[in-house]
Length: 126
Image 1: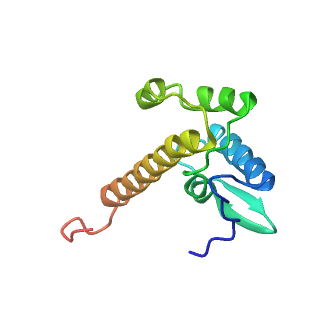
Image 2: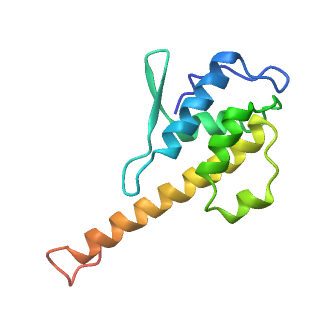
């Protein structure tokens, strides 16, 4: 997949990427179980939120307090989040990227189990 996002410059993200990261966090926070991965819009392109998080993993910019609150709320159920000090965009991005990957796997596993349970010819493997 092509990356349409701007690169970090010596660990710093442009403000547009920081704002997109905030949008991706909000989308993650409202992501309902069983739904497809949310997307955000950047320059007329729909991008999955996981791509935004992956792009920001090495960002050393300090995370604004408003986004720290969103991260704390969104990952309150995650034991790894309680052990992690979230100071930079990169800290939040690494935590979010792992959570997105887990939710993707959970969704794919649930779909496979449903299809296996409801297949017509049970003698043939899925």
